[in-house]
Image (cartoon, rainbow, N blue to C red):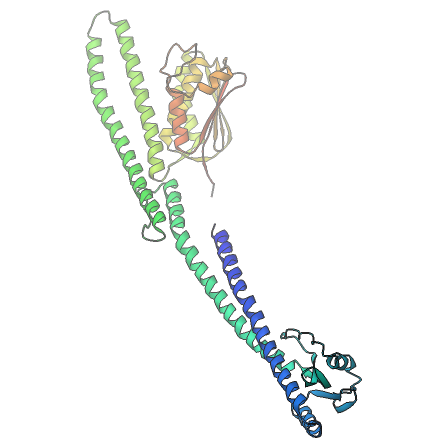
Length: 434
Protein backbone atom coordinates (compact mmCIF):
# COMPACT_ATOMS: atom_id res chain seq x y z
CA UNK A 1 0.00 0.00 0.00
CA UNK A 2 2.87 2.34 0.80
CA UNK A 3 4.35 1.85 -2.66
CA UNK A 4 1.03 2.46 -4.41
CA UNK A 5 0.35 5.60 -2.38
CA UNK A 6 3.85 6.93 -3.04
CA UNK A 7 3.50 6.16 -6.75
CA UNK A 8 0.21 8.08 -6.97
CA UNK A 9 1.56 11.07 -5.04
CA UNK A 10 4.79 11.16 -7.05
CA UNK A 11 3.00 10.90 -10.39
CA UNK A 12 0.66 13.70 -9.39
CA UNK A 13 3.53 15.88 -8.15
CA UNK A 14 5.68 15.29 -11.23
CA UNK A 15 2.72 15.97 -13.51
CA UNK A 16 2.07 19.26 -11.71
CA UNK A 17 5.75 20.29 -11.94
CA UNK A 18 5.87 19.35 -15.62
CA UNK A 19 2.64 21.23 -16.36
CA UNK A 20 4.19 24.31 -14.74
CA UNK A 21 7.72 24.02 -16.16
CA UNK A 22 6.93 23.25 -19.82
CA UNK A 23 4.87 26.41 -20.54
CA UNK A 24 7.48 28.44 -18.67
CA UNK A 25 10.26 27.05 -20.85
CA UNK A 26 8.39 27.79 -24.05
CA UNK A 27 7.45 31.26 -22.82
CA UNK A 28 11.11 31.97 -22.05
CA UNK A 29 12.18 30.84 -25.53
CA UNK A 30 9.44 32.92 -27.20
CA UNK A 31 10.38 36.00 -25.19
CA UNK A 32 14.07 35.71 -26.13
CA UNK A 33 13.14 35.09 -29.78
CA UNK A 34 11.00 38.24 -29.75
CA UNK A 35 13.91 40.24 -28.35
CA UNK A 36 16.16 38.83 -31.06
CA UNK A 37 13.71 39.74 -33.82
CA UNK A 38 13.09 43.26 -32.45
CA UNK A 39 16.83 43.89 -32.19
CA UNK A 40 17.53 42.82 -35.79
CA UNK A 41 14.48 44.63 -37.12
CA UNK A 42 15.74 47.84 -35.49
CA UNK A 43 19.11 47.34 -37.20
CA UNK A 44 17.38 46.94 -40.57
CA UNK A 45 15.38 50.10 -39.99
CA UNK A 46 18.55 52.02 -39.19
CA UNK A 47 20.31 50.87 -42.37
CA UNK A 48 17.22 51.65 -44.42
CA UNK A 49 17.34 55.31 -43.33
CA UNK A 50 21.08 55.88 -43.92
CA UNK A 51 22.27 57.85 -46.97
CA UNK A 52 23.96 55.84 -49.69
CA UNK A 53 27.38 57.38 -49.03
CA UNK A 54 27.21 56.36 -45.36
CA UNK A 55 25.56 52.95 -45.56
CA UNK A 56 28.67 51.29 -47.02
CA UNK A 57 30.95 52.22 -44.16
CA UNK A 58 28.25 51.49 -41.53
CA UNK A 59 27.62 48.05 -42.99
CA UNK A 60 31.29 47.18 -42.94
CA UNK A 61 31.63 48.33 -39.33
CA UNK A 62 28.49 46.41 -38.34
CA UNK A 63 29.80 43.23 -39.93
CA UNK A 64 33.14 43.70 -38.24
CA UNK A 65 31.66 44.32 -34.77
CA UNK A 66 28.77 41.83 -34.74
CA UNK A 67 30.02 39.32 -37.31
CA UNK A 68 26.74 39.43 -39.20
CA UNK A 69 26.46 39.87 -42.98
CA UNK A 70 24.48 42.63 -44.77
CA UNK A 71 23.41 43.27 -48.36
CA UNK A 72 21.85 46.56 -49.54
CA UNK A 73 20.44 46.96 -53.07
CA UNK A 74 18.69 49.77 -54.95
CA UNK A 75 15.28 49.62 -56.56
CA UNK A 76 16.62 47.78 -59.59
CA UNK A 77 18.31 45.12 -57.44
CA UNK A 78 21.81 46.44 -58.06
CA UNK A 79 24.02 45.84 -55.00
CA UNK A 80 24.95 48.92 -53.06
CA UNK A 81 26.62 47.09 -50.17
CA UNK A 82 27.74 43.47 -50.03
CA UNK A 83 29.31 42.73 -46.64
CA UNK A 84 30.08 39.04 -46.13
CA UNK A 85 27.57 37.74 -48.66
CA UNK A 86 26.42 38.65 -52.16
CA UNK A 87 23.06 39.73 -53.47
CA UNK A 88 22.90 36.55 -55.48
CA UNK A 89 23.04 34.48 -52.24
CA UNK A 90 19.84 36.12 -50.96
CA UNK A 91 18.08 36.87 -54.24
CA UNK A 92 14.78 35.39 -53.09
CA UNK A 93 14.67 37.61 -49.99
CA UNK A 94 15.65 40.70 -52.07
CA UNK A 95 12.90 40.05 -54.63
CA UNK A 96 10.28 39.64 -51.87
CA UNK A 97 11.41 42.85 -50.16
CA UNK A 98 11.38 44.84 -53.42
CA UNK A 99 7.80 43.65 -53.97
CA UNK A 100 7.02 44.83 -50.42
CA UNK A 101 5.93 41.34 -49.33
CA UNK A 102 5.78 40.62 -45.59
CA UNK A 103 8.60 38.43 -44.33
CA UNK A 104 7.98 35.00 -42.79
CA UNK A 105 8.09 34.98 -38.98
CA UNK A 106 11.38 33.95 -37.44
CA UNK A 107 11.47 30.46 -35.87
CA UNK A 108 11.54 30.19 -32.08
CA UNK A 109 15.09 30.12 -30.78
CA UNK A 110 15.79 27.02 -28.69
CA UNK A 111 18.95 25.99 -26.78
CA UNK A 112 20.01 23.68 -29.63
CA UNK A 113 19.34 26.25 -32.38
CA UNK A 114 22.59 26.92 -34.28
CA UNK A 115 21.65 28.27 -37.69
CA UNK A 116 21.24 31.78 -39.14
CA UNK A 117 18.08 33.76 -39.77
CA UNK A 118 17.60 36.10 -42.78
CA UNK A 119 15.80 39.38 -42.19
CA UNK A 120 14.74 41.49 -45.20
CA UNK A 121 13.16 44.96 -45.36
CA UNK A 122 12.24 47.27 -48.21
CA UNK A 123 13.77 50.75 -48.30
CA UNK A 124 11.60 53.71 -49.26
CA UNK A 125 8.96 56.22 -48.24
CA UNK A 126 5.29 55.29 -48.17
CA UNK A 127 4.47 52.79 -50.90
CA UNK A 128 7.45 53.70 -53.08
CA UNK A 129 10.24 51.08 -52.76
CA UNK A 130 13.72 52.51 -53.35
CA UNK A 131 15.70 49.38 -52.48
CA UNK A 132 16.06 46.56 -49.95
CA UNK A 133 18.19 45.56 -46.98
CA UNK A 134 18.93 41.91 -46.10
CA UNK A 135 20.60 40.89 -42.82
CA UNK A 136 21.90 37.42 -41.98
CA UNK A 137 21.75 37.14 -38.16
CA UNK A 138 23.27 34.34 -36.07
CA UNK A 139 21.08 32.70 -33.38
CA UNK A 140 24.08 31.41 -31.40
CA UNK A 141 24.05 34.14 -28.74
CA UNK A 142 20.26 33.99 -28.39
CA UNK A 143 20.38 30.19 -28.13
CA UNK A 144 23.00 30.37 -25.37
CA UNK A 145 20.85 32.91 -23.55
CA UNK A 146 17.81 30.63 -23.87
CA UNK A 147 19.88 27.68 -22.60
CA UNK A 148 20.90 29.66 -19.50
CA UNK A 149 17.31 30.63 -18.80
CA UNK A 150 16.13 27.09 -19.33
CA UNK A 151 18.80 25.85 -16.95
CA UNK A 152 17.44 28.14 -14.25
CA UNK A 153 13.87 26.99 -14.91
CA UNK A 154 14.84 23.32 -14.92
CA UNK A 155 16.85 23.78 -11.71
CA UNK A 156 13.80 25.33 -10.08
CA UNK A 157 11.62 22.49 -11.41
CA UNK A 158 14.09 19.93 -10.03
CA UNK A 159 14.02 21.60 -6.62
CA UNK A 160 10.22 21.65 -6.75
CA UNK A 161 10.20 17.95 -7.71
CA UNK A 162 12.52 17.11 -4.81
CA UNK A 163 10.28 19.09 -2.47
CA UNK A 164 7.26 17.18 -3.81
CA UNK A 165 9.03 13.84 -3.30
CA UNK A 166 9.92 14.81 0.27
CA UNK A 167 6.36 15.97 0.89
CA UNK A 168 4.99 12.70 -0.55
CA UNK A 169 7.25 10.70 1.77
CA UNK A 170 6.16 12.73 4.78
CA UNK A 171 2.46 12.51 3.89
CA UNK A 172 2.62 8.77 3.17
CA UNK A 173 4.39 8.13 6.44
CA UNK A 174 1.88 10.30 8.30
CA UNK A 175 -1.01 8.39 6.73
CA UNK A 176 0.40 4.86 6.86
CA UNK A 177 2.19 4.86 10.21
CA UNK A 178 -1.07 4.38 12.17
CA UNK A 179 -2.03 1.55 9.80
CA UNK A 180 1.35 -0.07 10.37
CA UNK A 181 0.81 0.24 14.12
CA UNK A 182 -2.63 -1.36 13.78
CA UNK A 183 -1.17 -4.20 11.73
CA UNK A 184 1.47 -4.72 14.41
CA UNK A 185 -1.22 -4.75 17.10
CA UNK A 186 -3.38 -7.27 15.25
CA UNK A 187 -0.38 -9.53 14.73
CA UNK A 188 0.53 -9.23 18.40
CA UNK A 189 -2.98 -10.27 19.46
CA UNK A 190 -2.90 -13.17 17.00
CA UNK A 191 0.45 -14.27 18.45
CA UNK A 192 -0.94 -14.32 21.99
CA UNK A 193 -0.08 -10.98 23.61
CA UNK A 194 -2.67 -9.74 26.09
CA UNK A 195 -4.04 -6.19 26.14
CA UNK A 196 -1.99 -5.03 23.16
CA UNK A 197 -2.19 -1.26 22.62
CA UNK A 198 -1.18 0.89 19.66
CA UNK A 199 -0.31 4.59 19.56
CA UNK A 200 -3.40 6.75 18.97
CA UNK A 201 -1.74 10.17 18.63
CA UNK A 202 -0.47 10.03 15.03
CA UNK A 203 -2.16 10.28 11.66
CA UNK A 204 -5.50 11.80 10.64
CA UNK A 205 -8.43 11.95 13.04
CA UNK A 206 -10.16 8.95 11.48
CA UNK A 207 -7.14 6.69 12.00
CA UNK A 208 -6.63 7.97 15.53
CA UNK A 209 -10.23 7.06 16.31
CA UNK A 210 -9.67 3.61 14.78
CA UNK A 211 -6.58 3.11 16.96
CA UNK A 212 -8.57 4.05 20.06
CA UNK A 213 -11.27 1.55 19.07
CA UNK A 214 -8.64 -1.16 18.62
CA UNK A 215 -7.23 -0.50 22.09
CA UNK A 216 -10.69 -0.73 23.62
CA UNK A 217 -11.38 -3.93 21.69
CA UNK A 218 -8.10 -5.48 22.87
CA UNK A 219 -8.95 -4.68 26.48
CA UNK A 220 -12.51 -5.97 26.03
CA UNK A 221 -11.34 -9.30 24.56
CA UNK A 222 -8.86 -9.81 27.39
CA UNK A 223 -11.52 -8.91 29.97
CA UNK A 224 -14.01 -11.28 28.34
CA UNK A 225 -11.46 -14.08 28.54
CA UNK A 226 -10.88 -13.34 32.23
CA UNK A 227 -14.61 -13.26 32.95
CA UNK A 228 -15.19 -16.50 31.10
CA UNK A 229 -12.40 -18.20 33.02
CA UNK A 230 -13.81 -16.95 36.33
CA UNK A 231 -17.31 -18.08 35.35
CA UNK A 232 -16.09 -21.60 34.61
CA UNK A 233 -14.23 -21.79 37.90
CA UNK A 234 -17.24 -20.48 39.86
CA UNK A 235 -19.71 -22.75 38.05
CA UNK A 236 -17.52 -25.78 38.57
CA UNK A 237 -17.27 -25.07 42.29
CA UNK A 238 -20.92 -24.14 42.81
CA UNK A 239 -22.44 -27.02 40.82
CA UNK A 240 -20.27 -29.88 41.92
CA UNK A 241 -21.10 -29.48 45.63
CA UNK A 242 -24.91 -29.79 45.15
CA UNK A 243 -24.37 -32.70 42.75
CA UNK A 244 -22.22 -34.49 45.33
CA UNK A 245 -24.85 -33.91 48.01
CA UNK A 246 -27.61 -35.15 45.68
CA UNK A 247 -25.64 -38.26 44.84
CA UNK A 248 -25.08 -38.98 48.54
CA UNK A 249 -28.80 -38.75 49.30
CA UNK A 250 -29.73 -40.90 46.30
CA UNK A 251 -27.29 -43.60 47.42
CA UNK A 252 -29.11 -43.82 50.75
CA UNK A 253 -32.51 -44.37 49.11
CA UNK A 254 -33.77 -47.94 48.64
CA UNK A 255 -34.62 -49.10 45.10
CA UNK A 256 -32.86 -46.17 43.58
CA UNK A 257 -31.45 -47.80 40.42
CA UNK A 258 -33.24 -45.64 37.83
CA UNK A 259 -32.81 -42.52 39.93
CA UNK A 260 -29.09 -43.22 40.30
CA UNK A 261 -28.81 -43.69 36.54
CA UNK A 262 -30.38 -40.28 35.96
CA UNK A 263 -28.03 -38.69 38.49
CA UNK A 264 -25.07 -40.26 36.73
CA UNK A 265 -26.32 -38.92 33.40
CA UNK A 266 -26.70 -35.49 34.97
CA UNK A 267 -23.16 -35.67 36.35
CA UNK A 268 -21.85 -36.74 32.96
CA UNK A 269 -23.71 -33.89 31.26
CA UNK A 270 -22.38 -31.40 33.80
CA UNK A 271 -18.81 -32.65 33.31
CA UNK A 272 -19.24 -32.38 29.54
CA UNK A 273 -20.61 -28.84 29.70
CA UNK A 274 -17.79 -27.73 31.97
CA UNK A 275 -15.22 -29.37 29.70
CA UNK A 276 -16.74 -27.67 26.65
CA UNK A 277 -16.80 -24.31 28.42
CA UNK A 278 -13.18 -24.83 29.45
CA UNK A 279 -12.21 -25.58 25.85
CA UNK A 280 -13.98 -22.46 24.61
CA UNK A 281 -12.33 -20.42 27.36
CA UNK A 282 -8.94 -21.70 26.19
CA UNK A 283 -9.73 -20.62 22.64
CA UNK A 284 -10.87 -17.18 23.79
CA UNK A 285 -7.84 -16.76 26.04
CA UNK A 286 -5.53 -17.70 23.18
CA UNK A 287 -7.21 -15.15 20.90
CA UNK A 288 -6.94 -12.52 23.62
CA UNK A 289 -3.33 -13.37 24.31
CA UNK A 290 -2.67 -16.31 26.56
CA UNK A 291 0.52 -17.91 27.74
CA UNK A 292 3.02 -19.52 25.39
CA UNK A 293 1.56 -22.85 24.17
CA UNK A 294 3.03 -26.02 25.68
CA UNK A 295 4.64 -28.80 23.68
CA UNK A 296 3.53 -32.42 23.74
CA UNK A 297 5.14 -35.59 22.41
CA UNK A 298 2.44 -37.21 20.30
CA UNK A 299 3.74 -40.78 20.70
CA UNK A 300 4.17 -40.55 24.48
CA UNK A 301 0.63 -39.22 25.00
CA UNK A 302 -0.83 -41.83 22.64
CA UNK A 303 0.84 -44.78 24.40
CA UNK A 304 -0.14 -43.39 27.82
CA UNK A 305 -3.83 -43.04 26.92
CA UNK A 306 -4.00 -46.36 25.10
CA UNK A 307 -2.60 -48.09 28.20
CA UNK A 308 -5.21 -46.30 30.32
CA UNK A 309 -8.08 -47.47 28.06
CA UNK A 310 -6.81 -51.00 27.38
CA UNK A 311 -8.66 -52.62 30.29
CA UNK A 312 -11.98 -50.99 29.36
CA UNK A 313 -11.47 -52.01 25.73
CA UNK A 314 -10.73 -55.63 26.61
CA UNK A 315 -13.87 -55.70 28.77
CA UNK A 316 -15.89 -54.78 25.67
CA UNK A 317 -13.97 -57.19 23.45
CA UNK A 318 -12.03 -54.44 21.61
CA UNK A 319 -8.34 -54.62 20.68
CA UNK A 320 -6.30 -51.38 20.72
CA UNK A 321 -2.97 -51.00 18.96
CA UNK A 322 -0.60 -48.10 18.39
CA UNK A 323 1.17 -47.52 15.05
CA UNK A 324 4.23 -45.28 15.54
CA UNK A 325 5.20 -43.98 12.09
CA UNK A 326 7.22 -40.81 12.79
CA UNK A 327 7.97 -38.94 16.03
CA UNK A 328 6.92 -35.34 16.47
CA UNK A 329 6.30 -32.56 18.96
CA UNK A 330 3.06 -30.60 18.65
CA UNK A 331 1.99 -27.22 20.04
CA UNK A 332 -0.64 -28.43 22.49
CA UNK A 333 -0.84 -28.95 26.23
CA UNK A 334 -0.38 -32.58 27.25
CA UNK A 335 -3.64 -32.53 29.25
CA UNK A 336 -5.59 -31.13 26.28
CA UNK A 337 -4.13 -33.68 23.88
CA UNK A 338 -4.92 -36.46 26.33
CA UNK A 339 -8.51 -35.22 26.65
CA UNK A 340 -8.96 -35.20 22.86
CA UNK A 341 -7.57 -38.74 22.59
CA UNK A 342 -9.81 -39.90 25.46
CA UNK A 343 -12.89 -38.68 23.57
CA UNK A 344 -11.84 -40.41 20.35
CA UNK A 345 -10.93 -43.67 22.10
CA UNK A 346 -14.17 -43.64 24.12
CA UNK A 347 -16.25 -43.30 20.93
CA UNK A 348 -14.21 -45.90 19.07
CA UNK A 349 -14.51 -48.47 21.88
CA UNK A 350 -18.25 -47.91 22.36
CA UNK A 351 -19.37 -47.72 18.74
CA UNK A 352 -16.41 -48.74 16.56
CA UNK A 353 -16.36 -52.52 16.28
CA UNK A 354 -13.67 -54.82 17.59
CA UNK A 355 -10.42 -53.19 16.45
CA UNK A 356 -9.08 -49.69 17.14
CA UNK A 357 -5.78 -48.39 15.78
CA UNK A 358 -4.05 -45.20 16.92
CA UNK A 359 -1.60 -43.87 14.30
CA UNK A 360 1.08 -41.31 15.22
CA UNK A 361 2.69 -39.58 12.24
CA UNK A 362 4.65 -36.41 13.14
CA UNK A 363 1.95 -33.80 13.96
CA UNK A 364 -0.99 -35.98 12.87
CA UNK A 365 -2.92 -38.31 15.17
CA UNK A 366 -5.41 -40.75 13.64
CA UNK A 367 -7.87 -43.03 15.46
CA UNK A 368 -9.32 -45.69 13.14
CA UNK A 369 -11.89 -48.40 13.95
CA UNK A 370 -13.61 -51.17 11.99
CA UNK A 371 -17.14 -50.30 13.02
CA UNK A 372 -20.09 -49.23 10.87
CA UNK A 373 -18.88 -45.64 10.63
CA UNK A 374 -21.20 -42.71 9.94
CA UNK A 375 -23.16 -41.56 6.94
CA UNK A 376 -22.03 -38.48 5.07
CA UNK A 377 -24.81 -36.45 6.67
CA UNK A 378 -23.91 -37.67 10.16
CA UNK A 379 -20.21 -36.94 9.62
CA UNK A 380 -21.06 -33.30 8.92
CA UNK A 381 -23.07 -33.06 12.18
CA UNK A 382 -20.92 -35.21 14.45
CA UNK A 383 -19.08 -32.27 16.07
CA UNK A 384 -22.27 -30.34 16.83
CA UNK A 385 -23.22 -29.91 20.48
CA UNK A 386 -25.64 -32.54 21.86
CA UNK A 387 -25.74 -34.43 18.55
CA UNK A 388 -26.10 -38.19 19.02
CA UNK A 389 -26.25 -40.91 16.39
CA UNK A 390 -29.21 -43.22 16.07
CA UNK A 391 -27.36 -46.01 17.84
CA UNK A 392 -26.02 -43.83 20.68
CA UNK A 393 -27.47 -45.49 23.75
CA UNK A 394 -25.13 -43.57 26.03
CA UNK A 395 -23.28 -40.30 26.14
CA UNK A 396 -24.22 -36.64 26.16
CA UNK A 397 -23.41 -35.68 22.57
CA UNK A 398 -20.65 -33.35 23.76
CA UNK A 399 -17.53 -35.48 23.36
CA UNK A 400 -16.65 -34.72 19.74
CA UNK A 401 -17.72 -31.09 20.18
CA UNK A 402 -15.28 -30.76 23.07
CA UNK A 403 -12.47 -32.44 21.09
CA UNK A 404 -13.10 -30.26 18.07
CA UNK A 405 -13.05 -27.08 20.16
CA UNK A 406 -9.82 -28.05 21.94
CA UNK A 407 -8.07 -28.86 18.65
CA UNK A 408 -9.28 -25.62 17.06
CA UNK A 409 -8.17 -23.62 20.10
CA UNK A 410 -4.62 -24.88 19.52
CA UNK A 411 -4.68 -23.96 15.84
CA UNK A 412 -5.36 -27.48 14.57
CA UNK A 413 -8.11 -29.32 12.71
CA UNK A 414 -10.28 -32.34 13.51
CA UNK A 415 -11.56 -34.28 10.48
CA UNK A 416 -13.96 -37.22 10.40
CA UNK A 417 -14.58 -39.63 7.54
CA UNK A 418 -15.87 -43.14 6.96
CA UNK A 419 -13.44 -45.67 5.44
CA UNK A 420 -14.26 -49.25 6.51
CA UNK A 421 -15.12 -47.70 9.84
CA UNK A 422 -14.84 -44.23 11.33
CA UNK A 423 -11.51 -42.42 10.85
CA UNK A 424 -10.83 -39.40 13.10
CA UNK A 425 -7.75 -37.34 12.16
CA UNK A 426 -6.27 -34.66 14.40
CA UNK A 427 -3.78 -32.25 12.80
CA UNK A 428 -1.91 -29.93 15.17
CA UNK A 429 0.81 -27.30 14.61
CA UNK A 430 4.14 -29.02 14.90
CA UNK A 431 7.30 -27.85 16.58
CA UNK A 432 10.33 -28.14 14.25
CA UNK A 433 12.98 -30.50 15.48
CA UNK A 434 16.30 -28.80 16.32
